[in-house]
Amino acid sequence: MPHLGWDCDALGTDSVLLVVDHPRLEEKLIYNSLKEKGLKVGILNVTTTPLPINGVKIPEIALIRTVGMFRGVRSSAVLESMGSHSINSSSTIMTCGDKVLTYSALSKLGIPIPKSLLALGRDAVLKAYGEFQGVVVDKPPLGSWGRMVSLIKSAEMAVQIADARGMMPSSLRGHVIQEYIETGGRDIRCLVLGERTIGCMERMASTGWKSNVALGGKVRPIKATSVVEELSLKAAEAVKGEFVAVDLLSNEEVLVNEVNGVPEFKGFIKATGIDVAKELASYIWEVLRS
Ligand SMILES: Nc1ncnc2c1ncn2[C@@H]1O[C@H](COP(=O)(O)OP(=O)(O)O)[C@@H](O)[C@H]1O
Ligand SMILES: [Mg+2]
Image (cartoon, rainbow, N blue to C red; front, top):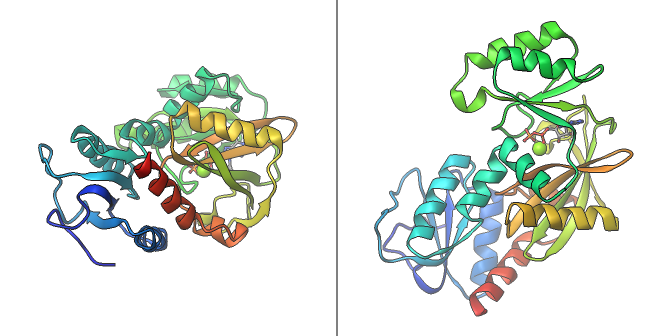
């Protein structure tokens, strides 16, 4: 992939700028698919090239593909301010990046989520733990790949987690204290693009209870039920996402657990065979035509 700065081709009509920090296979696939569509494509690595906040030359579409959530939020905000159409928008990336904001946005639309309490201090954590029976899930508002998502099995553990988190940067200090949904380590991930679901897969934890592919979770394609399909679309709408991954937990009821604003999709391609990059390039092509 060529590295392009601001004096690149990806400016003006029919241009797409991929905004990255640590380009992965996904970004390479997207770059190639956009090129195949005949679009002007550039890549901007925000860790090596500054973004002018008051710049005038802009890409028509900014496709935010940073691993770092705040890098995505901030570069998206800057590009939007200059008039680029950012996918996803800075506010979507922010809402999806913070689990408290995500759950709030989902609840606002009446979308079912696991029963959750926000605890912003040690005493609140203990009281929140006391609201549930047995095992409880604790997650920091920010984070991915299952990191720091923990099972609390006793009041002593709740206090230990709260104390450890209290030593961390303020962005990680809060707690979502949540009912543990008995799923056998399974969850469902659907990719939503525009107004439709492009496919769904099941993720199954290889060890333990967390299904994250980054933790070795195994994937297989599934056909979405109408409930899963509807909830995925509604969750995308709740965060105003154009290209998002919706994660659902299912036992007696289907619940939305998470919405990802910069979806990774290597595992999804492996499971479903769906050419996500091609679908995304076609969607962007349509957006540019409309
Ligand atoms: N309330 C819950 N009940 C059961 N399993 C859960 C619950 N919350 C999370 N998990 C499991 O843990 C994994 C990681 O949690 P998640 O909230 O998705 O955080 P992350 O953003 O780190 O992926 C999920 O994919 C799911 O398998
Ligand atoms: Mg997750």
